[in-house]
Amino acid sequence: MLSLKINSDLLECGTDEAGRGCLAGPVTAAAVILPEDFTHPWLTDSKQLSDKKRRELRTLIEKEAIAFGVAHVMMEEIDKINILNASILGMHRSIAQLFPTPEFIAVDGNRFKPLEKIPHQCVVKGDSKFLHIAAASILAKTCRDDYMEQIAEKYPQYGWSQNKGYPTKAHREAIRAHGTTPFHRRSFKLLPEQIKLPL
Image 1: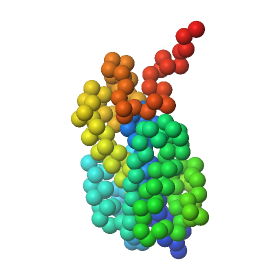
Image 2: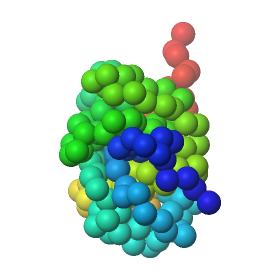
Image 3: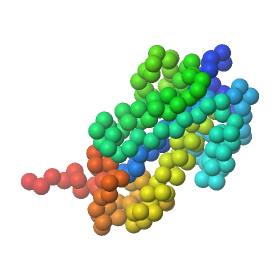
Image 4: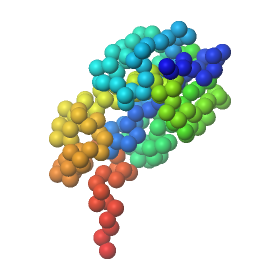
């Protein structure tokens, strides 16, 4: 059973991201403030759920949440500031959309940068421990999936509607066969042979 939040007496948001390990597309972050009485038997880490359950939960979260925000950080920014900084920036942008402003931030993972003097706590595997972080993981994952399915229509050969930009064998074979797109992250090792430098 997941806990509602870390501090029972504060207005607290959970935040998480999706797509850090992808070769293409944005990293997407979300932040959620849930009501005190919120509960749902399915709500857990989005990676443990089917797409159908994630989408049903997303509809419920968007309807029931006190506030939620979602932010994409695009490939150019990822390449410029690196994926860790881009993930944190996405969380900051999603939290900035929340009204009312949270009094405390519960962060999935182990790295974060302070935001406007709001206290925060990092929680490793927080999306399997706290409801608001799990809710944020579902919004981040489903919103990013929607984006990848949209751009897959323009570049169907990369299989993004299935692999969502992750480094599957099929995705890497498509990069080898067709080259890169404007949606690929140039700072990432897109093909294993990139590490072999000509002498």
